[in-house]
Length: 385
Image 1 (tube, rainbow, N blue to C red):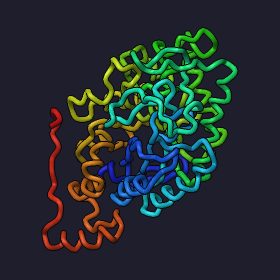
Image 2 (image 1 turned 180 degrees about the horizontal axis):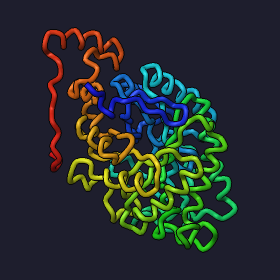
Image 3 (image 1 turned 90 degrees about the vertical axis):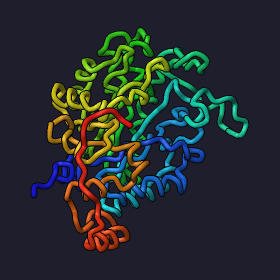
Image 4 (image 1 turned 180 degrees about the vertical axis):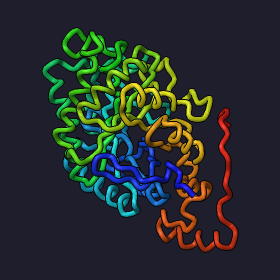
C-alpha cells in the first residue's frame, strides 16, 4: 500500500517533519504576565503526543505593547526563554517539530478575552505597567467604534519596532524552536501596515502597495538576520480581507517574501476590520483552501492550508490535488487532540501505533489486535454541521 502524502515525511531547509500535519497556532489567552503556565504545557504537549508533525505554539508577542489581552504570551525579554524552552523540549521529545508564532497585535491591543466579550479592556489597576501598554498602529485609526485609537508610529520609531521581531526570533532560537511563523494576518500589526484601509501614511511606509509592503518585508529581513538559515520561516497572511488587501496583492507579496527567506505561506483570511467576519464564514469544509492553492501556484512558494479541515482523507485530497504542501489542523484538534493518530488508523497507516508514545501505542495496538481498532471513513465535501 502506498503511504498517503499526509503521512509522508517532508523536509523544509534542514528540518525533517515526520508527516505533513501541522498544529495551527491557537491563542489560549492563559498566560500570566507573558509567561506560559501549566495549561500551555498540557495543551501543546498533547498535540505532540497525538502524532502531529509540527506543533506551533500560539502567537507570542515581540513587544510588551504588542499584547492583545492580559493572557498573551511574550518573548520580548530573555526571562521568557527558559519556560518556553521547556515546552519546545517536550514537543520534540515526542517526535514533533517545535514551532512558535511571533506576533504583534497593534491597534487591536488591550482587549478582553473572547469569552469575556472580545471588546476593549477597561482600566485594570492590578496591571502595574498599564501605561506602558501603548497601543500603536501605522495610522491613528481605531479598529472599530469604541476601541482605542492607536498612536501612529513615527518614522523614527519603526526601525526599533522591526528590530523587536528579530530579537524575539533570536530568543526563539535559543529556546530550541525548530521553526518560526510570523503573524501577518487577522488585522494585527503587519496586516495593518499592508492594508490601504488601516494604513493611511504618506511616508515610505504608506501610500503605494510597494510602500505598504515595506514593513512586512523589513520584518522578514530582520528576522532572517537573527534566525538560522538552516531553520524554516513561515508567514501567516490573510489572503482575502475584503478591505482592500486580497489575493492579487498577496501573490505579489508572497513572491517578495520568498526572495527574502520565507519558506511557507500559511493562508488564512479576514480580521482587518470589525465589519468583516473572519472565523465566522464557516460554510463548508476547507473554505480557505482555494487561497492556499492560488498562492502556491501563482507565487511559486509552498503553502499551508487551514480552515475547517476535519477529516484525514479530506486533508489527503488537498495534498494530492496540489492545493497546499502542508495542512494545519486547529479547532478540530480541540475536539480530538489525537487527530493525527486517528487519521492514520482510518487511512490504514501505522497499524502498530508506532507514531505515538508507547503510553498510548502499546495499549491501543494490543486492543486493535483483538479487532477493536478505528474504522475507516470516507470524507464527502459538504456543509459543516
